[in-house]
Length: 360
Image (cartoon, rainbow, N blue to C red; front, top):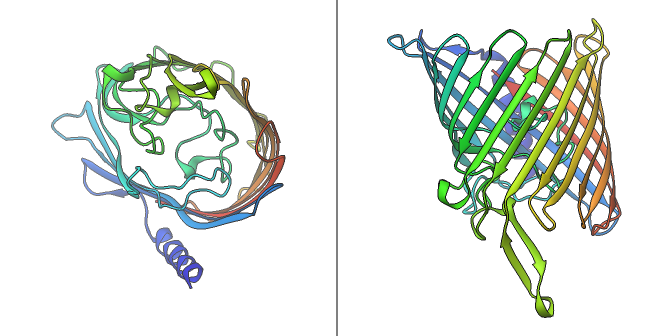
């Protein structure tokens, strides 16, 4: 009965969304949103298989541009992530340790200081990462990486400046409350204080070569105190095997590039991420993506990716993820992945997922 009710909810949402469009309430207010639901099944080499059937996430966003202040734009979004989590990552879902399923995600104001400079303050998403935080914008149902090392930050609060001196170059810097999230907040919250572990980010992107985008970014978080940020805490064995938690600075380097091959919009993408946060919080992620468009409605991503924790576990993952786009509001996606682990609790795992994506 529970599964039938969830399917009924997904079906009802599918019927409703195509009737929507990006809603311009008036000259100052625009509303948009998306929702993603999936069935995911994971079969590891050791231990029982697991599955999940959920509306995985949803977002409703409002963009305000006051008619009396055209250079100012405010963005607010409500984010929903149910408990239950992912079959692949094994996380419990939700957006806070208390089990909350909804939170205020975006909450920022941007001031266009000139045609080339934007200044933003509030709560916003990290610059870093080729793959998106937003499930409706990802190439596959799951991310290619982020399972072990998790080097890509999520949301945090602070101020940032973006500069576009010409049509092919863009760069930006940010000072934020922390690079990584509070423990248990599913990358939706920073720690809320510069004192505990201030974060800094910067990036540069170039599109001077036709069809090629090159992006480089860095992140740094000051020494983290135990109990504030799982992304910056390292553990090591002390006398008699006692576990000692130490605070560490965290450094992240992220390089990615994408290239559109032909008029069919087939493309390649590659990314390398390096993170150094101390013992068992150091290593790299990488991915290679290829997209082939069979038609205007049917396409597929093929991906090889890997993650390696220095002194710890590693894996190689092989994935294929076809998508059928019914219309601008509705799409359907499948994914199969095989993961080969080393120095991990399991040897390998097979994953299958089926997803429905809605947006308006």
